[in-house]
Length: 325
View (cartoon, rainbow, N blue to C red):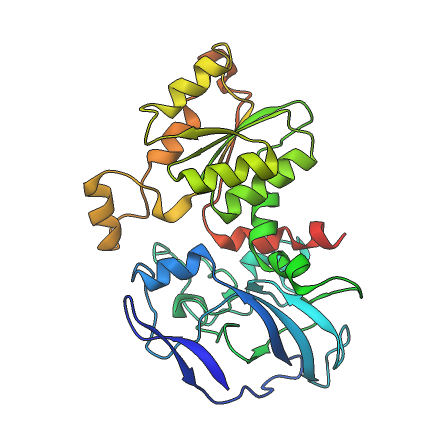
């Protein structure tokens, strides 16, 4: 089969790779019909993700048609169309029983987060990602092996095209979870930092939940223009607005917003020093976005303010049961 493989910083290639085969009794083999590029893939491409190896197959936002199933697979069968979540979860461990699938105890053979110096168990395995999270081949390929097929795959009803459901794999649940974490309510005024795909999904979900005013902060006019046209946001271009937090305070009569959502995360634009430390993997990311997200409110409102951060895409699949239900 053909697959997109990692070959080092700024070097990815489509190569011929061995077709995947069933390994465990609850595996399935998927023929991929649609896949996407995530911001997390760009972190890998830029060389900012540790424990990548040459030849790793990328991709964690994908869907397709079930070709083959192991003998213990109960929930899907060959011919079914499914979306595959980013996180690989067993469905039976302590955290899976709490629907905290990103913390699954049984699927990751890696060490987990690089900052985990204690004996805590690592988070769940992830498709197409670092060997810290299992090094499982991803879905930017013609075929992919899907472990734990009784837990992850989402069965797609007839009549829905791939483009209507593909985002259930990662960015839509991530944006939705951010809005839930921020406790957005009808009539709220909120600020979303970042007009990329996750920020747009957060805006769509906030609007669905009844947010009255949605401010969106970004530096690219084409992204802000799309957000205005599609979701009716109020744009703030920080290339032209020196202090977005101060602007938000003034725009809300000195009261600030009800909730802020950081939809930028790992590669937030910060100082030259922060960028250098991130490149050397000595700094997790710039704190500039989080600082701006925390500022647009007065001291009296601080205790009531909600801030939701997109720490990583791993949050996405903790939202999958909410999407399914």
